[in-house]
Length: 112
Image (cartoon, rainbow, N blue to C red):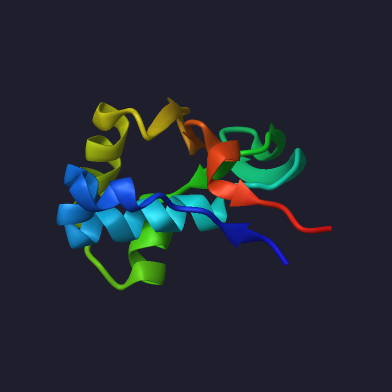
Protein backbone atom coordinates (compact mmCIF):
# COMPACT_ATOMS: atom_id res chain seq x y z
CA UNK A 1 0.00 0.00 0.00
CA UNK A 2 1.24 3.49 -0.82
CA UNK A 3 1.18 6.20 1.81
CA UNK A 4 1.50 9.95 1.81
CA UNK A 5 4.13 11.60 3.96
CA UNK A 6 3.33 15.16 5.07
CA UNK A 7 5.48 17.28 7.32
CA UNK A 8 4.06 19.09 10.34
CA UNK A 9 5.65 22.17 8.76
CA UNK A 10 2.47 22.41 6.68
CA UNK A 11 0.64 23.63 9.79
CA UNK A 12 2.49 26.94 9.45
CA UNK A 13 2.04 27.34 5.70
CA UNK A 14 -0.68 29.47 4.10
CA UNK A 15 -1.85 26.45 2.07
CA UNK A 16 -2.97 24.74 5.29
CA UNK A 17 -4.83 27.80 6.55
CA UNK A 18 -7.25 27.66 3.59
CA UNK A 19 -9.29 24.43 3.88
CA UNK A 20 -10.43 24.38 0.24
CA UNK A 21 -6.92 24.95 -1.12
CA UNK A 22 -5.60 22.25 1.23
CA UNK A 23 -8.31 19.89 -0.02
CA UNK A 24 -7.38 20.58 -3.65
CA UNK A 25 -3.67 20.09 -2.89
CA UNK A 26 -4.35 16.71 -1.24
CA UNK A 27 -6.53 15.80 -4.23
CA UNK A 28 -3.56 16.56 -6.51
CA UNK A 29 -1.31 14.30 -4.42
CA UNK A 30 -3.83 11.45 -4.56
CA UNK A 31 -4.58 11.78 -8.28
CA UNK A 32 -0.99 12.12 -9.51
CA UNK A 33 0.34 9.07 -11.31
CA UNK A 34 2.75 6.82 -9.40
CA UNK A 35 4.46 5.67 -12.60
CA UNK A 36 4.52 6.71 -16.25
CA UNK A 37 1.28 5.77 -17.95
CA UNK A 38 -0.77 6.59 -21.03
CA UNK A 39 -4.10 8.39 -20.72
CA UNK A 40 -6.79 9.00 -23.29
CA UNK A 41 -7.89 12.64 -23.59
CA UNK A 42 -10.29 14.47 -25.88
CA UNK A 43 -8.58 16.66 -28.43
CA UNK A 44 -9.46 18.52 -31.58
CA UNK A 45 -8.71 15.29 -33.48
CA UNK A 46 -10.94 12.99 -31.41
CA UNK A 47 -9.25 10.95 -28.70
CA UNK A 48 -5.52 11.33 -28.17
CA UNK A 49 -3.22 9.16 -26.06
CA UNK A 50 -0.76 11.19 -23.98
CA UNK A 51 2.10 10.10 -21.75
CA UNK A 52 1.60 11.07 -18.10
CA UNK A 53 4.74 10.87 -15.98
CA UNK A 54 5.10 10.19 -12.26
CA UNK A 55 3.67 13.09 -10.28
CA UNK A 56 1.34 14.22 -13.09
CA UNK A 57 -2.37 13.88 -13.85
CA UNK A 58 -4.85 15.17 -16.40
CA UNK A 59 -6.90 17.92 -14.82
CA UNK A 60 -10.43 18.99 -15.62
CA UNK A 61 -11.94 21.71 -13.45
CA UNK A 62 -15.51 20.42 -13.77
CA UNK A 63 -14.59 16.84 -12.91
CA UNK A 64 -12.56 17.91 -9.88
CA UNK A 65 -15.36 20.20 -8.68
CA UNK A 66 -17.81 17.29 -8.91
CA UNK A 67 -15.49 14.90 -7.08
CA UNK A 68 -14.74 17.37 -4.28
CA UNK A 69 -18.30 18.76 -4.17
CA UNK A 70 -17.11 22.36 -4.49
CA UNK A 71 -17.61 25.02 -7.16
CA UNK A 72 -15.44 25.27 -10.27
CA UNK A 73 -14.45 28.75 -9.08
CA UNK A 74 -13.02 27.32 -5.84
CA UNK A 75 -11.13 24.67 -7.79
CA UNK A 76 -9.73 27.25 -10.21
CA UNK A 77 -8.68 29.73 -7.50
CA UNK A 78 -7.10 26.94 -5.42
CA UNK A 79 -5.16 25.60 -8.42
CA UNK A 80 -3.88 29.11 -9.17
CA UNK A 81 -2.82 29.58 -5.52
CA UNK A 82 -0.99 26.25 -5.56
CA UNK A 83 0.74 27.17 -8.82
CA UNK A 84 1.77 30.59 -7.53
CA UNK A 85 3.13 29.06 -4.30
CA UNK A 86 5.19 26.52 -6.28
CA UNK A 87 3.36 23.35 -5.23
CA UNK A 88 2.23 22.49 -8.78
CA UNK A 89 2.89 23.46 -12.37
CA UNK A 90 0.30 23.64 -15.13
CA UNK A 91 0.81 22.57 -18.75
CA UNK A 92 -2.32 23.88 -20.44
CA UNK A 93 -3.50 22.56 -23.77
CA UNK A 94 -6.62 23.43 -25.71
CA UNK A 95 -8.71 20.52 -24.38
CA UNK A 96 -6.97 19.52 -21.15
CA UNK A 97 -4.44 20.63 -18.55
CA UNK A 98 -1.63 18.46 -17.26
CA UNK A 99 -0.78 19.17 -13.62
CA UNK A 100 2.60 18.25 -12.18
CA UNK A 101 3.04 18.09 -8.41
CA UNK A 102 6.40 19.70 -7.67
CA UNK A 103 8.77 17.50 -5.63
CA UNK A 104 6.23 14.67 -5.88
CA UNK A 105 8.66 12.02 -4.62
CA UNK A 106 9.09 13.72 -1.24
CA UNK A 107 5.38 13.19 -0.46
CA UNK A 108 5.18 9.46 -1.16
CA UNK A 109 6.45 6.42 0.69
CA UNK A 110 6.22 3.45 -1.66
CA UNK A 111 5.75 0.01 -0.18
CA UNK A 112 6.31 -2.97 -2.38
